[in-house]
Length: 153
Image (tube, rainbow, N blue to C red; front, side, top):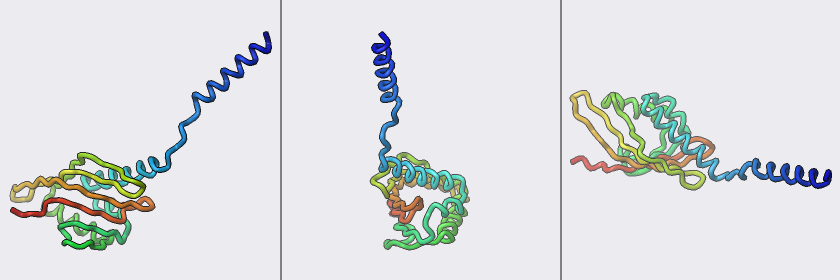
């Protein structure tokens, strides 16, 4: 009887241990979650108009492909980023990005779909759907490829 009780307790302990073991961690999913968090933080700072905190999420030599900067990639420092968005904020004091979806891709990219909107001092409004592909290395954004219709009709 003692032997059967011992076997029963041993089996129960082994089963309980098997049920409480954590799933093996997926390193790619962990990196993607961290990268997504960087991008979500960027939009929080953008919507708070905290350009210095937003700029700090980029490397100080980040590459931007953005229609507002021309047709070729441009390197921007933190100071350049702060200046650009401060000027934009001056034209549209209520500028806001409404994030529609964020898609982590691989171990370095995050794609964001959002709508930027704002009101100029003369009351004119803009509403612009945008897609940005971020490249993130070592926890900072090193490349920002932004796409939107730049056709001024």
